[in-house]
Length: 184
Picture 1 (cartoon, rainbow, N blue to C red):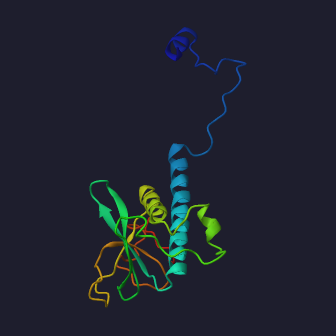
Picture 2: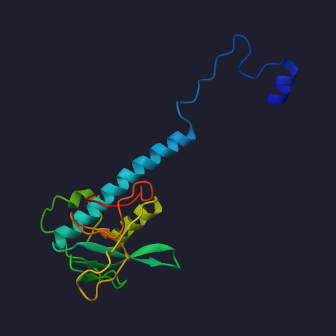
């Protein structure tokens, strides 16, 4: 229609004399909108990671690293274990939701409302949070090499759960601009 209309009249549709002008698209196009969305998602991912970290440290005060395991079949992360600062396992996830339950929040804990009715003691809820962060482009840290505990894994993906923890990945904003560190 546009080619025919233009060929017949020599004027593009909507540009005839007296025609109402079509409003210009908002400043910035799809690229700017996508960048803004990615920036917003990065902030939301950090906030969700902080909620996971604060939740785990409130029920396991010595928690330092939430170690993740990559599932190559389903191409997603699963929870592996929670380590203290020395690398000792505080909680090991077996894949059985009832056996893997974490301690519940005591009483009317202030973080309970932030979970929007979900129960973070259920490992499936925490797994969903980790998978959402990953799916939206978040990059997880790595367990530092040579933690003092002899059974500590080295350089496995993890979420740092407390401030002041040693990290395996360097601070490199251009390379790791989507690095998820709740206390960075």
